[in-house]
Length: 329
Image (cartoon, rainbow, N blue to C red):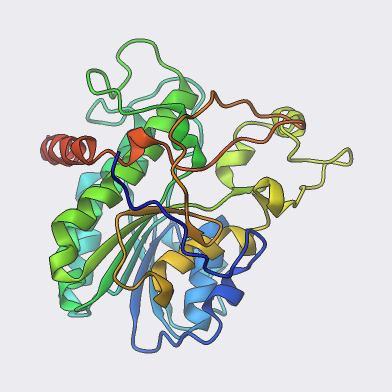
């Protein structure tokens, strides 16, 4: 496969923090939107972008709770956004466009924790695909005029090495049969990468670039907490006393390290002129062309390099077209 997944040699590492990645970068006059930018990696992303001078709008299902979490961070406002509610998405985008502000950075960060069994949204859609991908897809399309008005914008989709778990289930994306929560998660994370690939192809002529990011494994996020303490111990994410493990060389990071690749995608000049790539550890990920099955335990860490099904340009176009049809329902 012809591809552009070649590391740059950025000089940063898995242990680099968001503040270190943004050191010396002035984002004054820049406007950003971060979905779920009030908790976990989103909060660290908001904090780092604000510290660099950006004005940040945070989208949250619970604006009051988000405002309390963001108290004391300058240049931040909160708007109601429920990614499972198409009307809420449209309203958020309309409010932003009505403000007349350009949008330089859009961080599609929000993600649904693993549900307890199969549930569906009001449209009958599997909720991880609907939240993690379709909601962000609709939001990004709705904000396109503001992205264009920036005359240089970046869209960052927070994906995961979990994309390796599943390609898009083209004939059954909503798991009408054979539901598996981990496969549903993997499918949604593959969709995040394919969305960035096709967005970059379609919109780069408007100076809008797309990126997908693996932030690492961060104990304490709602996603990792959703698997339970026993499973986290088995995975080597908690030590014997129940405290989070931080070992960036194994891909297990604290929130400041986890947010670093997100802000690297959002603002690093090292990516000028580059888009449609999957990033990890503050660099472009190499392509794993012969991926092995994922096994995760204390003695084996999960690989996180991007695999071919997630950057296939034909799949990226197919997903875009499918997503357009699904958000019309």
